[in-house]
Length: 297
Image (cartoon, rainbow, N blue to C red; front, side, top):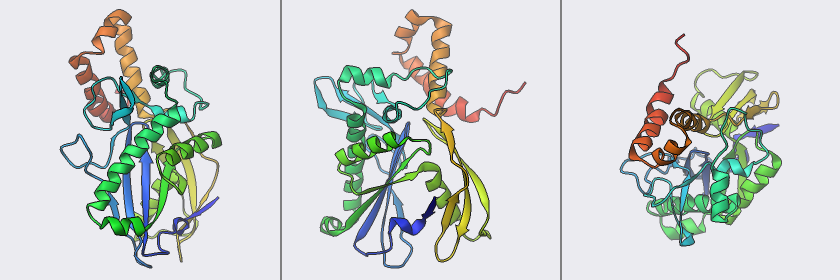
């Protein structure tokens, strides 16, 4: 498979905007670029999100529905009144093998209680972050101009996503008002970005490299070879990518499972609702886990 950067057609019209969505298992973000004739577009990331007091490119991929009205919900970093639904992205590919050591996600049971399928929850979240991104874009350019612009959307998906999962993801995006859309493999998007940033570092046709995309839900390994640099960058996938559900979210679940086994199921039921447990899981996620460098033994 060959993929050229210009396949996304960001340079064909001055009245065009490309909006890219990184819909992740644990965090999500949006960036956009206006085409400027044949020039290089300026890439802009949405950094201001509801519920945050500082600029950041990503927000949590969580949704919290009003118990009395399923059409009302909070999302991302907003303040939530009840427990959130997390990990819904993985339910878009339910046939993906789950490692034996990975505890069962609560997302499936959460959705069963809600009475909403995963595709609708994903559509609600994607629609919410897209609507917010549009508001931020409209704050920088006239709304009339934005309406006149032809919109193209790019959505990244795991390299190991099945065709069925891709179709389900497209369905969720369409329900969220995002169309037409181009899907791109997450490690491929990372490779294209990295190679553009390294354009002045003597890249050569025939160079090969391996991308490891260690995300919140999945970990993908994929290898590429540079086929062309001029007039545009082209890559060839050397061998089919490999991956699985071995993402960072699974580590958090394993930590929670370890606490449950330590204190017992009854005590854990009450413990998990306390501020202390919330602080402990936060410390594990943000401090202990990133600092781990392997068994010192």
